[in-house]
Length: 409
Ligand code: ASP
Image (tube, rainbow, N blue to C red; front, top):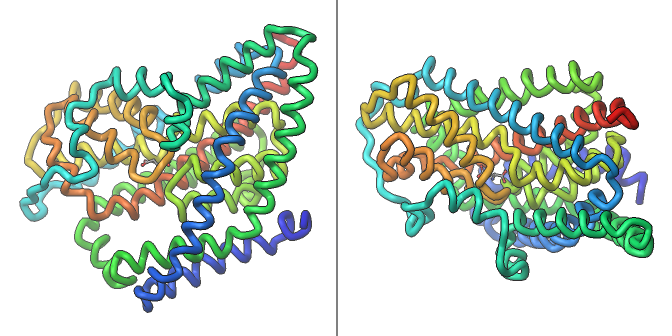
């Protein structure tokens, strides 16, 4: 089985799944919708394993890390700096390209997905998201941030017990191995799952020509977001990877390729997490100690793609309504888009919902979200891929600094 997973078979299978899914969805939309159950099975299996994966890996990583402060600080610095680079890139591009200026006068409606969330506040999106009074409820809703916080607390508590914690460390080490085994089993199913997901999504949109028509309708906005994601994902992050970790991006990408394609197909960083962990730890050989902490946390709070998109989308909406935003408002967009991306869960279209925060902060109408709703499911795939790629790069960079700093701090 190892050969099957490590060799090129699986990645080739996944690429075939993407292509075939694209063909079936584009030309036979009804069949595409019919094979959607394969995708659902796959996503359900991933979601099933994500919760134990997070609980086990984070607790284990915190229990075993001696210098938690340095790992935490480095992770924080990496997340914040790459997020800042992404949002600045988004703001610059949307101001250069002006996708919302001069188009047809658009009017939007508050979409269903936003209803009831119009009054969301920063405190709600950030602080209250971190702690849940009922972890089972959070787990049932696939709301992973409170589970991460709880795992960090329990990990720290076990670490504080000192040598007494030996049986727990042994138990969690075993559980970790078992969880990763299940991940490997699920991964065998990836090509079929991805085939089902892509075929169904394009099928639901009415086939390939409909998808192209949709992208064409908002083409400048669509291209502006995709161009920003492309620059960040193919130039900025690889440069950071190369300069700060010394790794060759062209060698690193194939290691995490399965995770990136899964991110594109599922539009969920959290559901992709099992494959991200497998690629970064087993294939790219980043130390598990670092990856177990950085990746689950990154999947829910470090979203370079989402923050870039939030900035572009908010300013696009302002342009479409003919509202001029000055430099002070751009600075506000910078901060609120950052907070909105941290607050967005790693699930499909979460960024669209937290955009309410950005729009409200500069007095833009929330109805503006209606302008970009139709195309959001498609852009979500591109930004989720960059979100996951940012986490993979982060794990390698932080690992490099952690291994150099061993024993120094
Ligand atoms: N779908 C994205 C993710 O899971 C979040 C977003 O909607 O931007 O990373």
